[in-house]
Each structure stands twice: as C-alpha cells, then as structure tokens.
Length: 521
Image 1: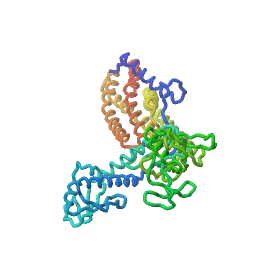
Image 2: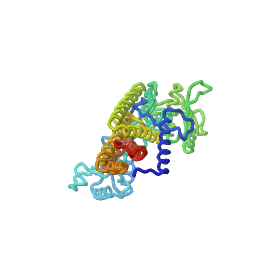
Image 3: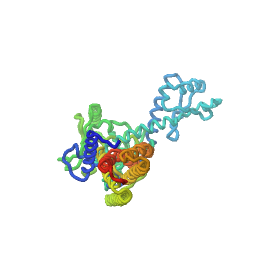
Image 4: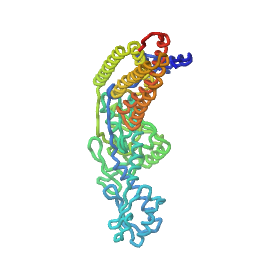
C-alpha cells in the first residue's frame, strides 16, 4: 500500500538531508574536519601531469644471473662435479662446460624441483641436447635460461619495489592526491593532479639513485678490479669496484649550507651497520680519496684526512640548494631496483581542465532542463514530483561521492548525466504502469500502489544489469573508465532509493489527499 510509517518517513528525511549536506559542502567552506569532505577533481578536470614509466629489467636480470652463476659454481663443487668455462651469454643465459661422465648426474640435479639452484631456471638446454625432448647427448656445454614463470616473478618483484620508491619520491615533493598504479608487469602509471611543471618530477623519477662509496685507486689505467668513471664535469678517475658503502645504509639525508665554505652540501646519517663499515674504511684509508658515486657518475671524491666514526658525513659538489634538495630526496627514498624510462607523457593545463568542467556542467544543465520540461508537460504534478526527486537524486549522488572523497573525472560527469536520464526513465515506467492499472482498478490508491509494485521487477532488472556492467568496468578499467563506472554505479543506487522512497512518499501524500479527484494522472 501507499503507506509510510512515521519512522520510515523520518529515516528517509534524515538520510537524505545528511547526504545532501555533504554534497553542499563542496560549495561552502566548513571548518569541522568530520564534515569537511569534498569530491577530488581528476587529472582531466583540474590539470596536471600524466606519466607512463617503463622499467628496464635488463640490469636486474643480469644481476640475478651473476648471483645464480656464483651459487651454481658452489652447487656443482659441493656435488663433486667438474665444471669450467662459466659465462653469461646475451645477458639472459648462463653457459658452462662439464665432464661428460657427470652429465646424467648434472641433468638430474638441475631437473630436481626442490634443488636450491632451481627456483627460476625451469628450462635447460645444451647445444645439442634438450632436457625436455630427451634427445641423445653429444655435447657437454649446458645453457640455462629463465623460464617464463621466472621472468614474470622477477619483473613483478622489481615492479613492486619500483612503485614503493616512486611513491616515496612523489610524496616527498608534496604532490596533491597522486595516483600511482601498475600497468602490466613492467610499467607504472603516475598521475599528478595540479602539477603544472613536470620537469622536476620527471628528473627525479628518471634517476635510479644507486649510491655507492668506493676508493679512488692510484693506478692510471684500468686493471682487474677497477673501472674508469667520469665526474660530472667530464674528467676521469680510476675507481675500485669494491663497494665500501651503499645507499642502503643511509638513514637520512638533508641539504645544508656549510658555514665554513659557504657552499650547499648534502649531509647524511648512516645506520649502525653502515656507521661501522664507514668508520673501518675511513680509518684504514686515511690519505686516500673516497669517491661518492651516483648512478655511475662521480659526484665528488674528497680526501680522507681523519677517520669518520660518528656515522654521519656530507657530500660536497657544485650544488644549488634545489639540486642538493633533490639529491637528498633521492637518497632518502632509496634506489630504484632498475632504471625507468618515460614512454608516454601528457600535461593538462588548468585552463583546459576548467573548460572541461564548464562543458560538463553546461551539458548537465541543458539535459536537466529538457528533462524537467518534458516531465511537467507529460505528467503535470507527478512530473513535478519526478523533478524534485531528480534534484534529490543528484544531491545524494554528489553527497555519497563527497563522503568517500571520490575522484571525479570528465567521464564521471558523463556518468552523472546518464544517471539523470536513468532516474527519469524509472519514473516514466512507473507512471505508464499506473495509467494501465487505473483502467481496470476503481480504487486510485490501489491503482497507484499496483503501478509501483508491478513495475518494480522491470526497473530492478534494468538497473541491476547496468550495475553489473559498472562493477566490471570499475574492477577491470582504469583512470577515466573507472571514474565513469563509479559515478554510474553510485547513480544507479541513488536512483532506486529516490524512486522507491522519496518519489513514492511524495506520490503517496498527494494521492491520499486527492483520492476523490476524477483524474489524477
């Protein structure tokens, strides 16, 4: 029946007013933190930068191969298997030669799933022998390579580490509401709303920030255990490959002004393990030059005049305060597991974003006015009830999005406009059904009640199927697609609430009061 208990009426009113208040809070300033919740504008509406980064996993693969090569030598030695000529081929395979008499034993060990040497290498080949095919052996040169599963695991691990480091660097800059997401297993999407100049963040995200401390040798030419590296000004130095200290031991780094030299420096503090290593190295290396190397380039190479035992030090160089600040940020956030390249970049200016907002609002206003006029012309007083419900529906939709501080994108505005049409569609179905019921039912209250009840299945079926599509889009989609799915899904729920609680309440009040009229609709 068209009957609402006082408790239901009060509950509907309180819920509607409370959620509507959150919607209105987007347009007025509220000091109370509990109620100060607003919709966040997406990158396409408030402007900002969009970066798609691709991780170059080649260095990670090479490092894993080198580690595996060492453990493989140890493994074969412990099993009394003679092996020689270990090398890495094409940066993706390990090659070695074994005694042919031991070949069956080696293949058996390598094929063992529980072997410590075989967490990733699940395909093994020889030049003329394939373990999987069980062909006749004629060579003792064995080649190991990563399986597809092993590569996926390695890339996934590298991506997870890279996302965490990227998040730290972005957070250090203080960017408002950054969006950092996985794309595949070797790409990272970074959306930075409100960031007009992306050059600094591009510079920070493009640096691996692999910091090492190594001694400068007295040799004038490269030899075993040394390599030639460049200073930032292009001069050369021969550096030992032995790493005294790495950036992993840094606890903190900050830019400072050196009072003595009046230069900008970066001071750093080490953890307990790093402090011990640094004290031991500087104690034995008094008089030597200690090179501070970042991503393969020498930042500075000061002379060690006395042991540094306090667990802290400073990096000098030709720094401005900005470059020193960025270097300190990179050191604090940690090194990326692999280099990253920017493969796609978009920047949306705030003016273009405002144009998008204006266009979306204009579309919503035009669509809303046309719907309002149609409903009043077609259904008179019930059209007015439908329009009031429509306004309430929009307030509920915006209020719920505000309550959860959702991000609104341009496709999200399209979802709101679509909600307006769907809300009216439900009312049209109900009113047309009521007209059919009035033809066969003399009691107008029963006719209106039957109209709502009998149209419920059709409306629910239509909205539930759309809701399922919205949920799938939200789960599988990204960025703007997810924004559209969110507003569409929430709009469906607010539409059903508005139609079957608010519109039905107003309709019931009017019909009960005017039940003796000859024609109501």
